[in-house]
Image (cartoon, rainbow, N blue to C red; front, top):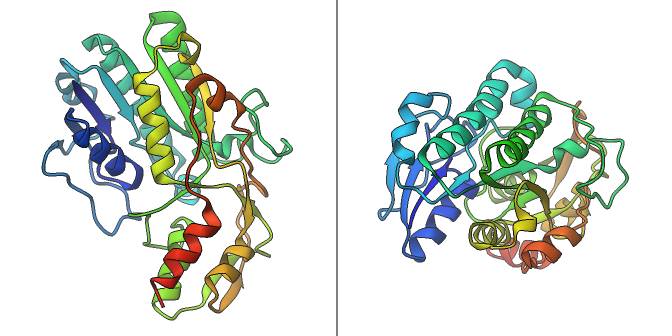
Length: 302
């Protein structure tokens, strides 16, 4: 089976690529290597790579020929950079997603699995967060990613393209981004600890996050690609563990020194996934518990 992975050289996308290769798929990766928080772009020698932006429809269209499934992970995927450059975030996350969906439709692809974000729940919704809650987008990143969800639903309902959208909560694990002040907190803290630096806690550190291991995220993608349950198509699903920790608790689990820096605008206070829908429709169950993973991996740094 030929499968396409956009953003397949990044953190989550590269794990999806590795899993597909291990299953014997012919894997085509579309990635323009523009992510600035990656120390490196990951390559699986068994996959085929094309350095091209999803914003260039005419260039990506031929790559979709003969594909059965598209995993769409390419994005401007950080909140603060999207605030600094909302035009670019809109081009990549909205126009780029529409290009991917249209190319899939034109090529007769069976389905598109779209990676979205829990950031769309914002501040107005009380955790645990359910997919039927109203959106409360606080920044250009969440606006543009939620627009991608709406495009997926429209392509299913209007054009019959099977789509499944995932709202990821805070994803961590091997290959997590480490570069820059806006890198995800787990990788950032562990890198600061490894270097003997003080961990930088944004604000008071009492904000709570549902941390989800990348291997569990990959498994959700595989289930979406294989499901025959029509109740999954045109739907949005949370992908989270269903338990949250404060940023301060994370720093204390790692055990090093920490300092507080100024709070950021445009970010939710607490996240916690209600995973009833994905468990019921796709049969997904998270396997990796965050606290245990942090303990094991922190010991490896000492």
